Length: 201
Ligand SMILES: C[S@@+](CC[C@H](N)C(=O)[O-])C[C@H]1O[C@@H](n2cnc3c(N)ncnc32)[C@H](O)[C@@H]1O
Image 1: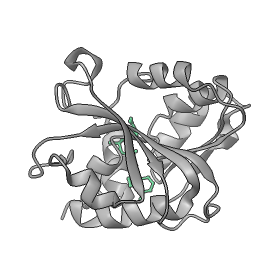
Image 2: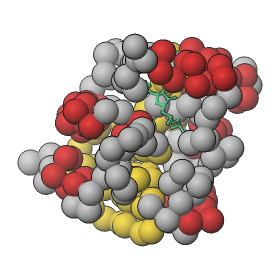
Image 3: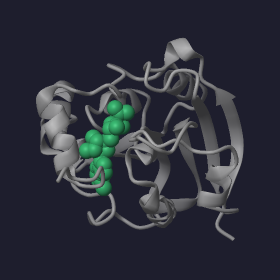
């Protein structure tokens, strides 16, 4: 039986085979724009499910203190090789749900094709774990895939679903469609850049 997408083997086999249709090959323009609008001053960023981890160098260059995490060894190895020895220690091999990350410590959590990669039954755990890692007043930002749920991954969000999933502690501050040309074909025309502020009640 094939492993489910919340098991590392699901991803390991795709990375080893070079079947990575989610891979943007760099940072999405919407993140580049965010980093221009919000240069860092040492804030702590977490990139869950970082894959090849292009965002690591971008966040570091913009002044952020970045940690990226993925539970697939081939992805971690390639990400570390790409960023080079100075930033390689910023890429952690581990499971987002269980790796001992500091609680309430991150100023920013970045999302791209992590939530939609997981079975929807695990989405409430993603929301709860994300909230547990974020400092009050911090931001959850990134690209969200709105589309069909079945036949994934990717599993799409319905309109309004992020609000139900993350709850009232996550206040939507910015929401914009991503131009189709700025997405991988798998997601084209169905991605939105969203920024939420974490204001625990
Ligand atoms: C669709 S890929 C996206 C990779 C990257 N975010 C990108 O935009 O290219 C999903 C990634 O999430 C990772 N992943 C899935 N579940 C995970 C978990 N529980 N902990 C850490 N990484 C996980 C997979 O290994 C895979 O690299």
